[in-house]
Image (cartoon, rainbow, N blue to C red; front, top):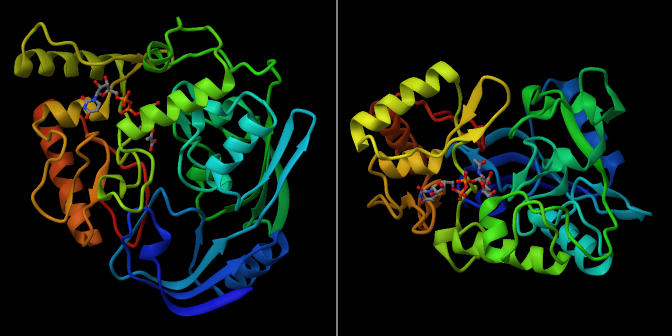
Length: 352
Ligand code: EPU
């Protein structure tokens, strides 16, 4: 187990932001992970568990306690059941499942940065797939009970960008994730996302070749600056910075009235089904229409020039710079449309 003191954390995040860790420990086996967590808990020491650092905003003061970096490895296929160790690089695992084994179920989640263990926490999703559609079980260390348990998909309480693990962040450390994939003779799962279907020239509900699906998604993501490129500051982000707001019917009606008043009666705000009595709208659209267009900002933290939902570090941004921009946008959108945006990335030592 590697252990460093006063270690910089910024290089371990996709935003490249954040102060140092009091102690940085890298664990390469489940036993090491559990031992570090147990020891920290017994000593009453603060603990931060770090995966791929792609959905994380760490404050400029860093983290005073132990930061545990999960670097476990394991890609195990049994028929169409895939078990991934938490430390596996997610996009590599997708590539292997698709390109080497021809299995469907996670092909539209290609190119998403971060680790496999992080995927159930916020129920990672894109282009019509969410990991909740394929996860069957999550093996996790339960810090409250002090033991490793297997959590069934049902007990994961998955929802849009949410789960039991996100609801109880100080309780769970994900060790392994099991997925039920599908052998569809080299074809993808039915395409659900309109934009993806359009790109691939098929109708919604049709299947396409797995490789074509993966490539189309990578192209779409790159076009939105959502594939990490160390050379390109436009991709130094935590992906979507805000979740898409879910409104009750009453809130949605009030929102539509504000849109009509501000932008004209002919303007249609994006609206998606979000369960009984609810509608989901688009945070990217709200940000844009509140006046924060692509590339907005003059300092070291600016909106991506390719997508308004990605707040980017142009090279020298601090957490303070990034949060100032996030607050400006949050306030601007609330003033314009009466909707309060909620951050998607996990905040460490800072809040909006
Ligand atoms: N839009 C704008 N301005 C922009 C970009 C988009 O007005 O600069 C509008 C578009 O016109 C579109 C709407 O916003 O109508 C939605 O945009 P998009 O299809 O890009 O999807 P999104 O809702 O912004 C979500 C996820 C992404 C995921 C994509 C594709 C969330 C918070 N974000 O983005 O996930 O890749 O759909 O499925 O749910 C992430 O979670 O980090 C993430 C990148």
